[in-house]
Length: 158
Length: 439
Ligand SMILES: Cc1cc2nc3c(=O)[nH]c(=O)nc-3n(C[C@H](O)[C@H](O)[C@H](O)COP(=O)(O)O)c2cc1C
Ligand code: SF4
Ligand code: FES
Image 1: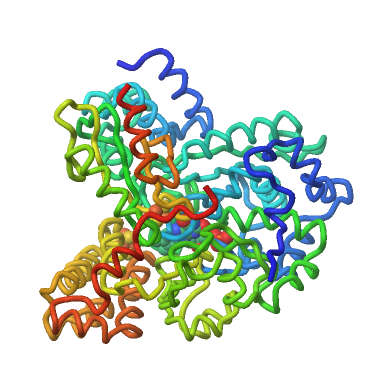
Image 2: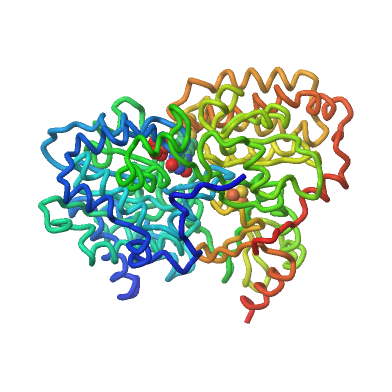
């Protein structure tokens, strides 16, 4: 169900914990599975749970508890903009509005061509760099002026 | 007016985080000193106690005292955890420590493990900073290869294994017992205390949890002595502290200064209030700390005792600056939404109460407030505080109480006139995109 490469990366996570505590690796394993699959379907979560000898329901609880796991399909690129107060004071909301207008979607929507999903995020621990956004969970972009947003969307669209 | 850097001293952005740079700055000399001079674990803890170091994660608990709670003779594993789940709005210092000086955290944790007899540790890293997590993994590999981590550290029989655990988006995992659950591969729901982590932590074993900046301070205490560290700050508030200054300032960013530095100096370091506008309010310790009006804040020094005397908390050292263009109702609305969104839902007063707080502030902001709403807000907070498993309930309540206390007239104006005291165009101008000279 997952590629050999993903399984090898999951094994690296498992090795961080005592042998009888494989479940500790579930967060890393779900992240790796999501990177490969784009989002976490039930069967992917089931597979991860079985790989770690844990109950599927326990893995599902983890996948639904943490915000960065997608248990619904998302567009090819997920953009998460921080609008929490410190960012909002320096343009976080304006940046989000600009993206909404450019993509013609609201938060929690995906463009008709399936390319972009927009999410509202909470503090990313980078408030000094506002406006801040995340691309596909793992790439943080700082000081996002309209020009930089245009550039970013154009690059992602290639 | 100046910074006083220990953790940030000699750093050059992305260029100086590697082991060789750290060693060139004098890194790992504290660990070597302990090993070479055979300093006992008890003496390490005594030195940390002498330093007056208080936890940099939010609660300000004395670190040496916390370390002394760990059982000395315990058969079996003891654990150490570093809390790098920096999610308290306004806080962005641990990210900079980890990306620019990761070995200071590794050395601090290794010394802590020696002092408390921990054989294994985890650094729990905030989900949103994936590249920082990857860099920390690299730093760990460097430290292992150089014999600063692993079995037989520096040729002795002291061993300590350290790993990075990556979070994936849950503010509550910054609460220390939720963090433990998360390391065990579960939902991050806080545990009832007692038992405290020092007796029942990761996998039920004795565990000590400290913040990233707390650990990063430890090598300096060992190298220069606890007393020297204490004297950098003021009595009961030892050392330097990194303040994350955000919001309406000219140069948002991290500033490491001596504890006890006047707030006015910190504000000046951060470029003063932006665009010549007037200071209105400051949240001095992260979003959970009570807000203070400008005049009270301008009389404070930046240390635990001064801020607490003024009616707030130094917390994580996140200083959120708001100028006169800010609508305080709107500011509170955003914070209340955050706590509602991030409540783990385990306790009824927090789960239901945070929803109430958000909905009432939301309706005031949107011109649908009722005359009785301020009393309602106060009674909801009274029903949350002290009645929950973890401190998130209090953290959601304190902003509400303090905003209403200090800026009640703005809330009343909203309720009466269905609009804000601060004109919409002024608000819009004040909250527009500002990237400052940093970028
Ligand atoms: C809701 C909540 C969130 C917290 N978030 C953090 C955090 O992001 N980082 C942190 O170090 N401490 C956080 N804390 C405080 C921790 O529970 C704990 O006190 C701290 O990590 C202990 O380390 P210290 O003594 O070195 O400060 C949080 C507490 C609560 C109640
Ligand atoms: S106070 Fe809130 S966040 Fe904390 S355990 Fe209770 S419900 Fe969860
Ligand atoms: S508030 Fe946006 S990163 Fe902290």
